[in-house]
Structure formats: structure tokens, C-alpha cells
Amino acid sequence: MTQDERWNTRYEEVKKFIETNKHNPSRYRIEEHDMLNWLKANRKALNAGRMKEERVEKFKELLAMTELYRRKNQYE
Image (cartoon, rainbow, N blue to C red; front, top):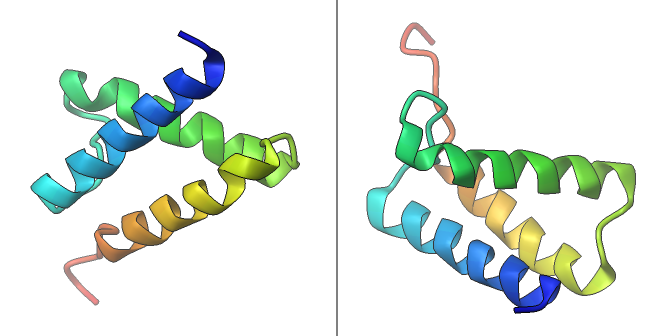
């Protein structure tokens, strides 16, 4: 499996998780930890400008999806 195939597999896994569960991966659940770490590492690569061009658009779509389910302060 190439690096691109592995990235696309993880991308689809995270996307499907968010669509079905209607929330972002949690840092408190062990089974969701790998997805959260993948998101954080890729967000860091995107911000640093190290992400491959063909991945940038797909990842920005995923970030837009995560914003829909962003945690909100209950007192606001």
C-alpha cells in the first residue's frame, strides 16, 4: 500500500466517522484517538505548507465538515 493510498483510506475513514456519528473524534475515547491524531497531524502539515497539493482540497472539505460539529460552550 502506497502512502497516498493509506492517506486516502484514513481520509475516508474519518469522513465516514463524522457523517455517521455527527461529532468529531474525541480525545477521551481510545478507539477515536488515531483519527484525532491523523486530523491534527494533517492540520499541522497544511498550516506549515507541507501538504501535497492534491490532498489540500480534500482536507479543506474535511475541515469544513469538522466545523459543523465543533463543540460549543453551553453558557454562550
